[in-house]
Figure 1 (cartoon, rainbow, N blue to C red):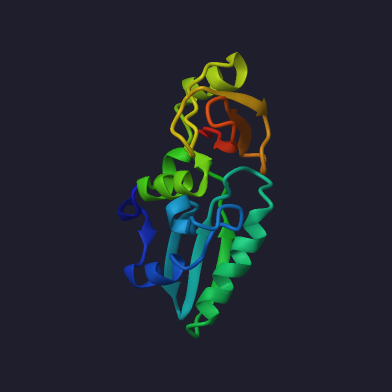
Figure 2: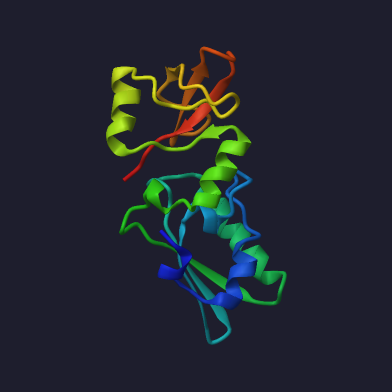
Length: 166
């Protein structure tokens, strides 16, 4: 989803871009697509934040980091968790997907391909190190619940695959 389609005031974007996802530090919260709204009302920045999945432990850290980032420029921020609509991997920006791959995490596939990979062992997940799809699932859960652990059968490197969430 494009940032232009969200209710985010332009003068707040530069601060939001400084706040990273603690689990994937190369991604800003904007690139990850978890900010639904950021507006200033009566001197207070009001932010609506959608977790990548219900119960995601990173949300408390992100909330604190957002408040700290705005505090550094003399603004108070309030963060509200918004569960509906549920976050989707479609909300990760293209720049975010590219940074994720450069960081060593394979980008999410489509929902049907995700099922084929995770349940039927199809070789569709691309290794972020060498680009091969000659990969296999090691564990349904990787370094976090939203990722699965894979291994490349060509370069023999393990890597996380970001599961498709809709």
